[in-house]
Length: 160
Picture 1 (cartoon, rainbow, N blue to C red):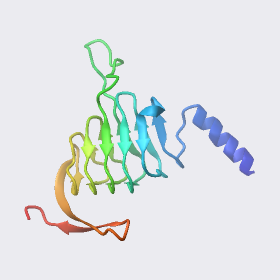
Picture 2: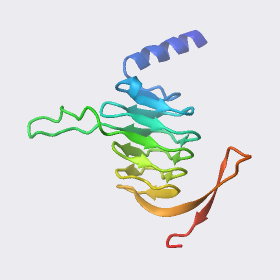
Picture 3: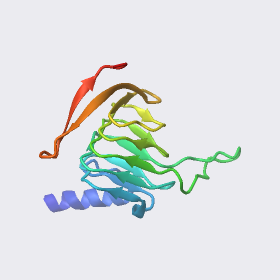
């Protein structure tokens, strides 16, 4: 039974259906660079730039990281920019479920992108962003311990 299930899954994925067990890269695969493992359903679009993912990034389900931007010329939506819209996701970030990251942004170290947020601008280190478009709602204090690989985070109230 396992062989048939794997064959059906492989066949459906080859036809364009999503496999919810692994990430999907649309566009040139050589533009996707990850320093860690990505185990959930994440969609990466590299048609208009490269995507760089740091270490210890935590992913929620149904996250979209999209470099593409259509260049509407008044007649068609089809033309899109071919490069220059790189996305950088730094070490220790948490990208929650349903978040969308648009091209041309950098997400700083230990940043948290809340569920359903749409990131259109750079996110500073230790920021918590939420909303459409995403805005900074809080900052976290980053404390690194050289003996431990984890990064401990304590919440800092806005304005402090």
